Image 1 (tube, helix red, strand yellow):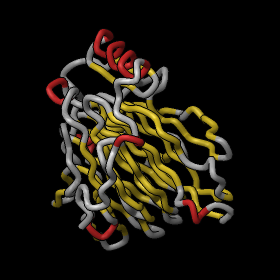
Image 2 (cartoon, one colour):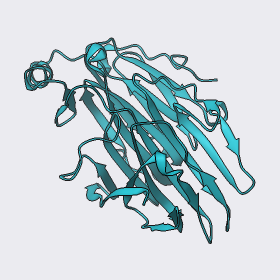
Image 3 (cartoon, one colour):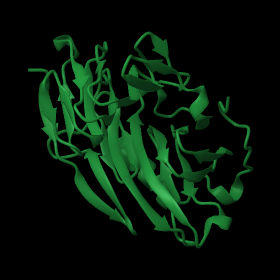
Length: 289
């Protein structure tokens, strides 16, 4: 049996958007470095001036946005700026503290737009908790593609299937978007401590064990796992090596100690975090190849 645990997501409403929150839950805080994981859509919304995620802080993590469909614009207080479209990935290393927003462009107000994305936070190792913020944007075409006879893997982070993704990893991490045609398969032999999978669309089985759609299953790579489907599927695999120390989380702050967590929250409450109003945005920051 390759599946060791199944996690039912909590459903959180953000305006008209329902978010499936896989991490953290009462059953499990982390999978590898992933300490927060939301998935939204697929759906459509009519864009208003309040759509998206307004300015808010982060510290102690690298935050990741992966657009399965749709578009958005990222701005952060360290100067990061990018216009993301379907298949693009943005990684913001918050480190010592940063604020950012992800909003539609102003000319999108009143239009119908796709909403289909993954939002994740990756806890930073102890030595990088207070690193300087940085941002990178990877366009869809820059992410490695691995083709199988009846399947396709887009490697978003880490190493797997014989290729390396260009996205920065602050600890050993893997993230992949997998599509399989009806009757096809993709092997999931990945060398990481902790691994999980959730099915976005279609039917899928792992070593002949059916996977429930919109749940997350932890699995063991030493069981030679193979992902199969009868009618076709799209799934996401994520994980990595466990951090060497525990993590504390409160609101948007993550830290290796309760003391550091409280310090970061107090810094924001006291107005000591940088703000978008004080930053100069540079659309060339990060990897945009």
